[in-house]
Length: 272
Image (cartoon, rainbow, N blue to C red; front, side, top):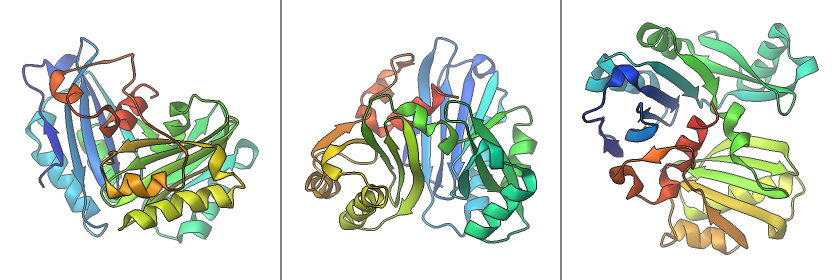
């Protein structure tokens, strides 16, 4: 597959570097933090459909040359959509399975995982394809694993009502928080700017949040000259773009892109 962005690690001792892999049914991203605390490489792949996810992931991970080397540390961040946020007192293996089956259907070829979100006292219970788990266990047996939804709320630091939206070519990952309380984290597919605006507006309406009071933070594939941004600006008064975390440094090749293109990826790296 051809990556949407492809900044390769050049002149880096990967044995001292930290590899991050974020993957879900819509795409896969690889980014590398070197031993000088600098992000020097990022490769972003987007999948055109959800039918060949396993093959897409396998071909990328087995064919990308730099992945054949050993890294000091590897973090895997799953962002598959099958996720349920559960109060900690209700989190139990059989109950977790039943909740996932009820919401997403009963599929035996899945692995159930859970992340406890200490700050919020809830469990993120999620499923990943068993075939993908086998690939990751084979290639990165000592990797640390988490789910995107388990750490995404840590990207929001403002008080009040905050709507976070990370855009890829055909989907949005959204997070709504009200006064530091998670309301919903969800992924939506979209084709037109009007679709994206509808989903974000519907999130606000569904959780009794006045659009005029929402701080909307945009990340990913969107810019101020796009029809997508213009459509959102019709409805949301308070819009800002995500920024790169100050705790890291970035090579010029990465820094030359608008900071919000990768802010959600590097922001997650600061949280895991």
